[in-house]
Amino acid sequence: QNTQVGIIGAGPAGLTLALLLKCRGIDSVILENRDRPYVESRVRAGLLEQNTVDLFRELGVADRLDREGLEHHGVYLSFNGVRNRVPFTELTGGRCITIYGQQEVVKDLIRANLDQGTLIHFEATATRIDGLETDSPMIHYEQNGEAHTLTCDFVAGCDGYHGIARKHLPEGSYNEFRIEYPFSWLGILAHAKPSSNELIYAYHERGFALHSLRSETVSRLYIQVANDDHIDNWTDEQIWDELELRLGDNNGFRLNRGEIFEKGITPMRSFMIDSMQYGRLFLAGDAAHIVPPTGGKGLNLAVADVKIMAGALTDYYETGQTTRLAAYTSDCLRRIWRVQDFSNTMTYLFHKQAKHGSFENQLQQAKFDYISRSTAMATTIAENYVGLKDV
Ligand code: FAD
Ligand code: DHB
Image 1 (spheres, rainbow, N blue to C red):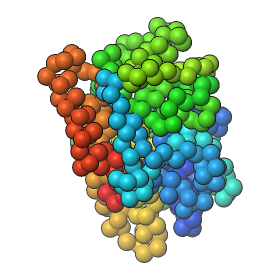
Image 2: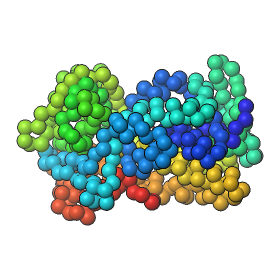
Image 3: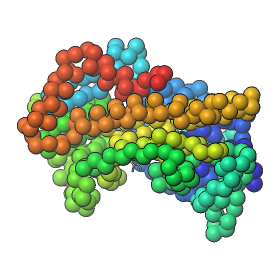
Image 4: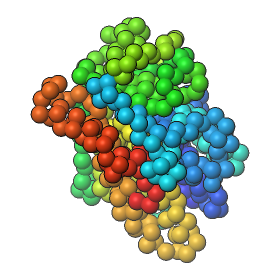
């Protein structure tokens, strides 16, 4: 089989890339390891920044997002029970975030791709890529126990952190950066009416907590736990008690409780490589970088990468020029480092690392106080959170 762009991975990066290419007349085929129900039900992120929503609208895939997504015009930051709101609208010239589950995004993007005639091979596992230095690289993949190849002009590695694409960058062609944080997130989804109309990020001496939501009847909540903790160590009641304590506002805050229908523990890491391409291979999204989830940036960064990749590929097909393809990594890195910094800052600001009352902890408190008192500092948080426009 032949196509112009062979895309590995049907996550937000691969699916958005295929749509961007299609509307510029460039064909692609997507290879996805998992089956369709699995990909469409995998619970992950839920926060879309303004740039992402704008792009989905441009692509004509935002009908359901516009109906069901929840626009938020501010966020609550809480430290030791003192809650402070950062208003986005005033501080960012009217920009905001939208809450809409990643699995809903993925469902919409798969449907749009299939409607437009883009082939998605599910349960097709890419195993190896050949000929990246030539004009017709080949992706080898396995489906139903049989070996296949997809020959293309370019390979887009959108196969996430554990994918195979990154492993095809030659050793020594890039530097790798990594932080493994000494804590994880225990996350739940529950049939419970959200207890706050906006998100709450909270530092508590027992650790971080986040209140988010998915709809008027579903809450999404997280707490900081140790890396060696296990989900079986927690009863549902213990999870609710801990959340209520950490999210408390010193003012009788009560958390609405309900049936927990999904729970899991996710480790936290920052990961980065400083070259995202080799020959005809270009990486995007989690395949190239991981940010800790504090700040809700992973999905948004994946979409920002493929927007740049699609622009560079379009330029090549329309003019034969390779300048933008050559500049792909450097065009992406500026935004990625910005987001790495924001995600890392939010992580250190709200997680318990040092002893309560220690020097480091007092610095956290001082930073929080400064956000509460300074419009400049609040604006810094707000503009990064809704997503910088032209980084
Ligand atoms: P992915 O969504 O990972 O998509 C990659 C796709 O490639 C997958 O469908 C995979 O099955 C497929 N694939 C892998 N290997 C192969 C292969 N060899 N052949 C074919 N296909 C392959 N971000 C937040 O902002 N907030 C959160 O709360 C949050 N929670 C998360 C929880 C978890 C458990 C994880 C893993 C991530 C979370 N993220 C979160 C990050 C966010 O979900 C990702 O940044 C986002 O999914 C990146 O999109 P992507 O398309 O680059 O990669
Ligand atoms: C959600 C996840 C995040 O990591 C975040 O910073 C905000 C919201 C969520 O799942 O809703």
